[in-house]
Length: 166
Length: 159
Image 1: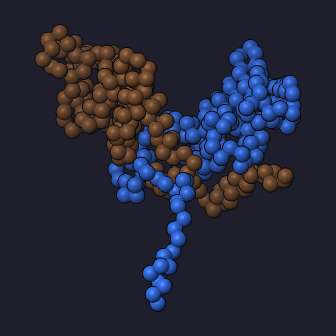
Image 2 (image 1 turned 180 degrees about the vertical axis):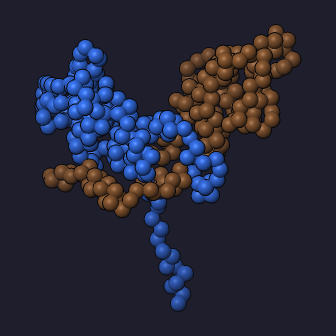
């Protein structure tokens, strides 16, 4: 009997993911409505989330957001680096990378990745627009060392740069 | 503001949806693209009505445009951080809509970044709740999405 007072359930500290400081429940439904945001402003917000979060979360929220995330203009820069994405190593980054490249429909102008891509060459293309065909060779100087790769494309040339990734 | 004779001669009057009139300098007005094009279209002595912007939002935008002209980069950064911190979520939403309508480019860069920070690493469910979005995918579309998400983790467990 007397024990019950000391049998307080142990409370685990809440994981960081759960702590939502700024957003409070009652504020979710108050006016004005987020849906009144112009589409391009919504696109700007989603763009800032980074590749992994767009692919896993944002594009799966509703049809409107899916449309926004499918727009090649969302994919002019593809950055999958530790600086742009947390929880980075949980995912198959190579698959995500190629998925993002496909979504860009050949409009990708800049790529920065910090992981190895299995093949040393690949094609960025838009099947409907042969003008956008790029064949990318990725010379990796030392394949044993993880490289940080950056790619920039201009109308006349495309080039890769690689620097060792710490 | 209106007392300055030299300023008020070429200042631009903006009328918010709740009936407040703001006089702003051309330098400030021109940083709102929508107003800039309205000034070009009409003669600048006319009061410009803003049907989608209330006094609070406009005063915030003016406060930002005046404040960010600080001298050093770090002072601007500090000002911007404080500016965003002072806004409640409800104010943030309303202001973002106003900023989107008035096309204030610098705030259109800053504010989406702030919102993105709030929804970073959050689940699909959280995003729906946060933005008040109803899931409008059909069951078959949902199934396809689940399949799609599965590929993201494929191969990770192999070794």
